[in-house]
Image (tube, rainbow, N blue to C red; front, top):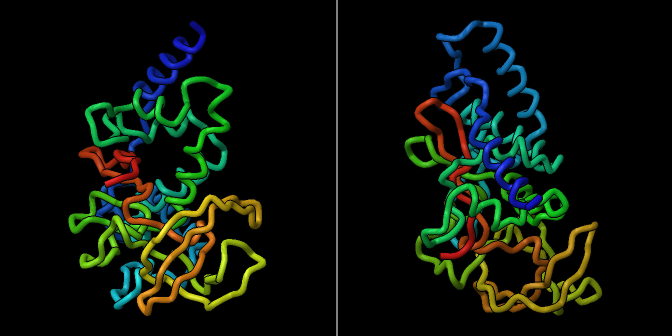
Length: 270
């Protein structure tokens, strides 16, 4: 009974809460003429503050290169989306489910069948009781997706994260191939830190042979070792943190008619 009451409360809270009306933005960092200057300046200052801490090495657009899936993050193109994403990062770090649900669409897609929507989202991520929420896999999953950047659609009203999906070569099979999400990643002869380093690779397109049962914790993060093959036929093992499939976990964010951004998709699979 307590569980049902909690779930109903969460759903009611999510539906009833709304974001403050945002300053209109046309997809870049130009002035917003229809809003008070003080509000516009405040947003611009906040935008510049967050932008200063962004990785300057990552361009807005993915640079297409044979054998590579180079990163790109277009979020800074849109002031309001950029600030929206930074707010999400804070919410995820705090594991604040009530704030998060304000940014989740009531029709969020969490699977490929008809069982979607906010209630399905809550159930899928074990958010239906207070004791489960802090331990939900939602938090590390979203943190990684937000950190890896992403790309807008041509109209600029939809953003997909991480960049791997939008930047993946059209000629590569997304069910077989994957992307190395890092520079100077060590490829090893075996699944472990104590094995020989074969070479270092950066943002390579690789064939994923298997995800091994061998897990290791490095710098507080636990992942399995993944066996991959490079374009030249070399096989080796990568720490799972640095390998992603375009069919893996990904999130979609949509700008509504009211100019508010919401998460409308969080799923894996093809």
